[in-house]
Structure formats: structure tokens, C-alpha cells
Amino acid sequence: MQNKKRVTRLLTVGPLPPPPSGANISFQVFCSEAVGANRLSHLEIIDSSPKRIKQNTSILTLRNLGQAWRVIRQFATQIKRMDAALIFGSNQFLASLTPILVLIA
Image 1: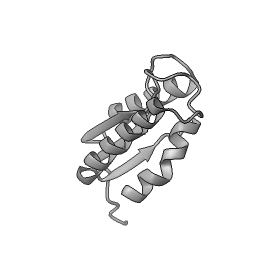
Image 2 (image 1 turned 90 degrees about the vertical axis):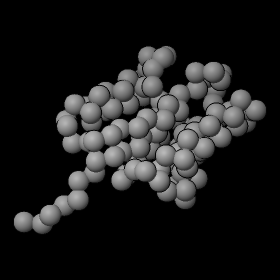
Image 3 (image 1 turned 180 degrees about the vertical axis):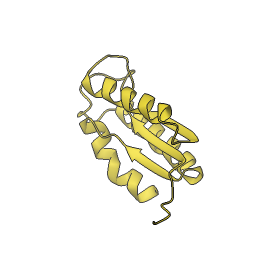
Image 4 (image 1 turned 120 degrees about the vertical axis):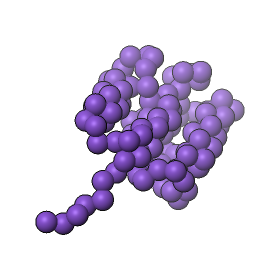
């Protein structure tokens, strides 16, 4: 039997509630299940939900750029200490950041 390396430290990027919506709830359930399965020693969550910006995240504004910079900065700082990362790209805002985050990783 092969000895597979187990992921023990996982960095996740995704939207957390509020507001309660499909993607936010799905990501929250995933995080709860990941912790509850006792397969991780550490789960770090970067909340990418646009709580402080308007719902239309496809428009380029200073607030959207600030939100993007916050996510990128947190990801770059924390990825060094993790075994793996999961990017839950549930909206156009986070999907547009994914190539940058993959390059950083």
C-alpha cells in the first residue's frame, strides 16, 4: 500500500456569510466538514466575501481593489506555512484573483 502524504494544514479562500446565500453557505459547510473530519491539524480561512463593497463585484472600483489586495496579501503571508490551498472561486471577483493566487503559491 502506498503511503500517501496527508494534508494537515489547509489554507482556504472563499466567501463566508453574511449575507446568507448559496455560495457562502456551501463554503461554510465545507469548512465545518473539513474540521469535523479530523483530517486537518489546522484550517486557515481567508474570507473573500464582499461585505463592505457593493454587490456588483464586476465593476473596478477602489473598494474592489482594496478587497483584492487584502485577499492577496493574506494569501501570500499564510501560504508558506500550509501544506495545501483551496480557492473556492464562487464569484467573478474571486475567480479573477485565482491566477494571481496560484502564481503566489
